[in-house]
Amino acid sequence: MTVSAYILIQTEVGKAAQVAREVAAIPGVTSAEDVTGPYDVIVRAEAADIDEMGQMVVARVQSVPGITRTLTCPVVHLRS
Image (cartoon, rainbow, N blue to C red; front, side, top):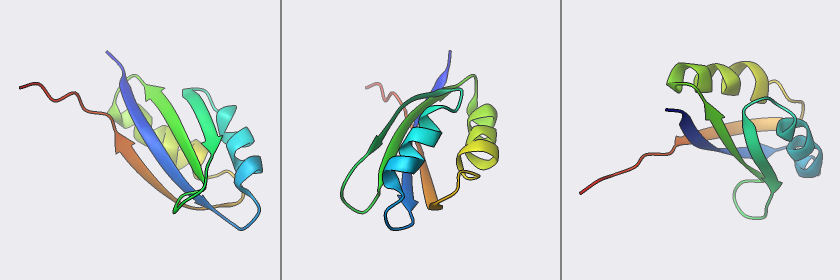
Protein backbone atom coordinates (compact mmCIF):
# COMPACT_ATOMS: atom_id res chain seq x y z
CA MET A 1 0.00 0.00 0.00
CA THR A 2 1.34 3.43 -0.89
CA VAL A 3 1.05 6.75 0.90
CA SER A 4 -0.37 9.68 -1.04
CA ALA A 5 -0.11 13.35 -0.14
CA TYR A 6 -0.89 16.79 -1.44
CA ILE A 7 2.03 19.18 -1.14
CA LEU A 8 1.03 22.85 -1.08
CA ILE A 9 3.83 25.13 -2.21
CA GLN A 10 4.42 28.87 -1.92
CA THR A 11 6.96 30.31 -4.34
CA GLU A 12 8.83 33.51 -4.98
CA VAL A 13 6.88 35.97 -7.14
CA GLY A 14 6.78 34.85 -10.77
CA LYS A 15 8.27 31.40 -10.11
CA ALA A 16 5.13 29.20 -9.90
CA ALA A 17 5.20 27.81 -13.45
CA GLN A 18 8.93 27.05 -13.29
CA VAL A 19 8.57 25.38 -9.87
CA ALA A 20 5.62 23.27 -11.09
CA ARG A 21 7.65 22.05 -14.08
CA GLU A 22 10.67 21.14 -11.97
CA VAL A 23 8.66 19.44 -9.23
CA ALA A 24 6.67 17.44 -11.82
CA ALA A 25 9.92 15.76 -12.88
CA ILE A 26 10.65 14.39 -9.38
CA PRO A 27 10.07 10.62 -9.08
CA GLY A 28 6.93 9.95 -7.04
CA VAL A 29 5.18 13.15 -8.11
CA THR A 30 2.02 12.25 -10.02
CA SER A 31 0.91 15.83 -10.79
CA ALA A 32 2.04 19.41 -10.21
CA GLU A 33 -0.19 22.35 -11.08
CA ASP A 34 0.36 26.07 -10.70
CA VAL A 35 -2.77 27.62 -9.14
CA THR A 36 -4.07 30.89 -7.72
CA GLY A 37 -4.84 31.50 -4.06
CA PRO A 38 -2.73 31.30 -0.90
CA TYR A 39 -0.52 28.62 -2.48
CA ASP A 40 1.13 28.84 -5.89
CA VAL A 41 1.62 25.16 -6.75
CA ILE A 42 -0.30 22.07 -5.65
CA VAL A 43 1.42 18.70 -6.01
CA ARG A 44 0.07 15.16 -5.68
CA ALA A 45 2.74 12.63 -4.71
CA GLU A 46 2.98 8.94 -3.83
CA ALA A 47 5.58 7.02 -1.84
CA ALA A 48 6.00 3.56 -0.34
CA ASP A 49 5.58 4.86 3.22
CA ILE A 50 5.43 8.08 5.25
CA ASP A 51 9.21 8.11 5.78
CA GLU A 52 9.86 7.96 2.04
CA MET A 53 7.31 10.75 1.53
CA GLY A 54 9.10 12.90 4.09
CA GLN A 55 12.46 12.26 2.44
CA MET A 56 11.00 13.21 -0.96
CA VAL A 57 9.65 16.49 0.37
CA VAL A 58 12.71 17.49 2.37
CA ALA A 59 15.48 16.25 0.04
CA ARG A 60 13.92 16.83 -3.38
CA VAL A 61 10.91 19.14 -3.39
CA GLN A 62 12.21 21.74 -0.94
CA SER A 63 15.52 21.96 -2.81
CA VAL A 64 13.84 23.28 -5.98
CA PRO A 65 14.88 26.92 -6.48
CA GLY A 66 12.06 29.43 -5.99
CA ILE A 67 10.18 27.56 -3.26
CA THR A 68 9.69 29.55 -0.06
CA ARG A 69 7.39 27.22 1.93
CA THR A 70 5.72 23.81 1.71
CA LEU A 71 2.84 22.18 3.56
CA THR A 72 2.44 18.41 3.20
CA CYS A 73 -1.06 16.97 3.63
CA PRO A 74 -1.09 13.16 3.73
CA VAL A 75 -4.24 11.58 2.32
CA VAL A 76 -6.24 9.55 4.85
CA HIS A 77 -9.15 7.24 4.22
CA LEU A 78 -11.61 7.57 7.09
CA ARG A 79 -14.02 4.69 7.47
CA SER A 80 -17.19 4.87 9.53
